[in-house]
Amino acid sequence: MHWGSGTPWDHSFDYWRKTFDLVRGRGAINFVDMHTGGVRLRDVASGVYDASFTRWAREARAYGHPFFLRWNWEMDGGWFPWGATRRNLNTSADYVAAWRHVHDIFTQVGATNVTWVWCPNVEPLRKVMRYQRLYPGDAYVDWTALDGYNQTGRQSFRWLFGRSYRELVRIAPRKPILIAETSSVEGGSIPKPTWVTDALGNRLPREFPQVKAVMWMNWRIDHGGTWKSWEIESSSPTQTAFARAIRSPYYAPGGSFANLTPLTKIVPRP
Image (cartoon, rainbow, N blue to C red; front, side, top):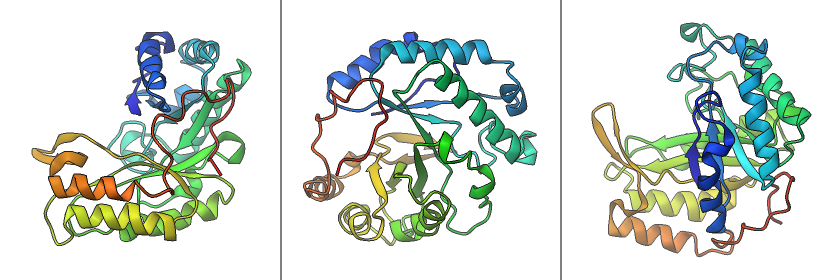
């Protein structure tokens, strides 16, 4: 279950404790976004916000149950203020230094139940591809990840994710990969039910073996004045296609993740 915690200085970990418990109570894994808002990454790296990160990490360690933490995602673009772009006055080096600094705080307090997810956006056209410069290193990342959407109804899963997937495998060949955000619009030259069947039933099992988890954006949102119907229930055929695809033994049954070993990392099931 994917949800966002905002910045650690707005709310500490314990503020979200009921949400963590609710997700775990359903047998699901918490997949939590944390970001740094509009503050400069070099200030994060230099320790200006250490008190907030330390409190959050200590409370996470006290909680003990394993969860995914996606920190400052889609950093390869300029649409979020933490993006490593000239527009945001952050550099790739700033991003890496900030990531390592925050990770070190969690390590120092013993928050070994936090699984660190490093997540750029897909770059099928290589317009802003610079994953290598933004990667904090194997010692600081547990899973790599990608976000990508069929926003036009014409972009296949293979086209969206293929090139970026291969780049992640090149950079971090031993790390499991997670699709952190994906969906498709209804309409277009690739009907959404067809897109779902192709992505979940064909491409992922056959062409993306290092992908070990998938998050579906099940939310209808207003994107720049246009409604994007990302949800599974956007049509009956789409819902049927989704249900059929995940019946495969390739996918783990829901409700089976409540009792992961405390204070351990999340690893792919065999």
